[in-house]
Length: 424
Ligand code: GDP
Ligand code: IMO
Ligand code: MG
Image (cartoon, rainbow, N blue to C red; front, side):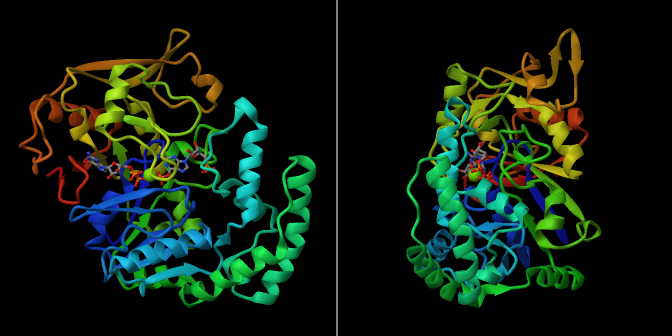
């Protein structure tokens, strides 16, 4: 460590939760800085599965401080439900901290997400319908309600009244939906505010002080680079910045304070939701990856689209995130496939492209250029050193490293926190 940023290098669901949980054993603090409950981070510890949406994946370590930073969007009911679930399993929440500047997701954000998606018809974005986009829209429009507003009943009443008047017009007149009731939202959210107030603080100060005191601080990305509002496959993206640069704004600290940037990459590619996917497999190998890798969304349960590993994407992830290393997950899922393909470039109009196109229209007609390699049949879920991996796995790893110029530092061979080892 001391201050390590960890992000998704593809379209999300790379195994960030598991990786954070492992690194959190040595971390004093884990920080979420963007996104909200659209994230679904699975941590399997001692045979028990935990699905975390808003609470950082360091929560299973009692000594680790877990921060929900200013750049996140918080659904209070979901946060409290997650807190209650963890408490009922015996985990302490005394080290959970929520930034006063984080924006609050209200029922009208969720309603507008659902209505806008429906209105797009076949051109919908495939959002998680958690109100993420509409909440970040309010933030950018400077009308959002923040945690510091929520915990002040008079300020909350005032802001909710003004906002709801506008949102109800949108809901009824533009989308033909049903108006939402002020009293109902106010009462429900005041109840949430009372419970959340003890956790609210200025987390920028906490994070800064921890780094200055040489503590190990881990920044936990949600989503992945290709879902970034700027660098992703726009408009099929989320509304925040899930790249390492996003941690600076979303946790309120400067870039010189981050020492190390790790990208979590799955050994193949998946994507949930709509949008282009050059190496997607619509055949039985894609089906097999989904079945063996249990590729169903943690948040929505939707089947994830599956495809071959794409090194054009990982090369882009190295550049955009300034990666110093990869954590490669789910290598075990590839076992039993006779021939593995890895995309190292795209071909379009006779030209070979090594850099990910800026516009999704340029992705259309891009043909992946594949390197074919012999697969491996061994069950590798019990392997704990690089040397003990089958030759084919080693070649696969070395190809990723040579094509991206970035070392693989951690390797995952199963869901459990034990099923993981360092490259060296
Ligand atoms: P996240 O959103 O990046 O935290 O990833 P998700 O939790 O949504 O999805 C990753 C899934 O893969 C979870 O079910 C993890 O438990 C699982 N997983 C993570 N690493 C490995 C691995 O190395 N091998 C296997 N088989 N499963 C893994
Ligand atoms: P984790 O942190 C995978 C996708 C949605 C949709 C797009 C926009 O678990 O990796 P949104 O609700 O954010 O407006 O949806 O982004 N998406 C994710 N896909 N993993 C996630 O998070 C995601 N969070 C959002 O499926 O395509
Ligand atoms: Mg996930």
